[in-house]
Length: 229
Figure 1: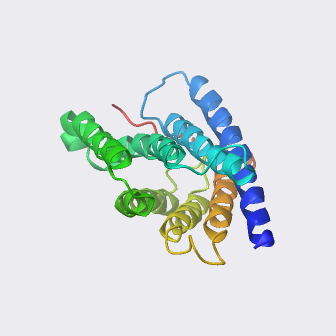
Figure 2: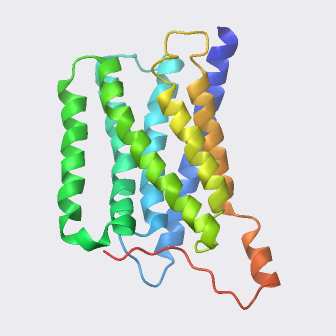
Figure 3: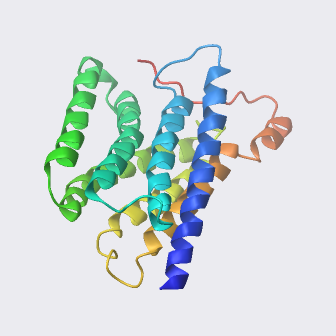
């Protein structure tokens, strides 16, 4: 049990550090662009990582005894998770449903209302997770499919799309397993999987191969996906 608790603490702290670092890196990358859109992937993921860091920071503080594991803090954490996935939902709409762009804001508001309604009014923690985790899984599958396409087509060369596919898989596994493993000896596994997901994401967005590939193939002009909104 002590080993499991230590793994939760170490993985949680690693996730927070990586998420904050990635958010800062992507935020600066977005600000350095000549043309900036609210649906650009660097900004979307920068916001998502802030929400992720906020959520995991609360978990870490609870594990070390600074914050109590109460329902109010669980609801606050859930808001942080919503802050991570709602911008991604907006980006997915821009990618896959540009023909209904006039409805995008309404759909984002609808998801936000659903998320907050479940968070504020459902009284049981496990029921909240059961109602919200499917949303995370669906959006995760859509994002994973997006990165499979960019991997196969080579459209998004700044990011290692194959690593993002693995990252999304690990991230979804951490969410799906969180409820069933909550009261077992493997309670630490979702946090470890989430930390692995964040490490893969950091490598994917850092992409140490990118500059080398540019030198080898100077005729190519890779670009980050910029989604018009």
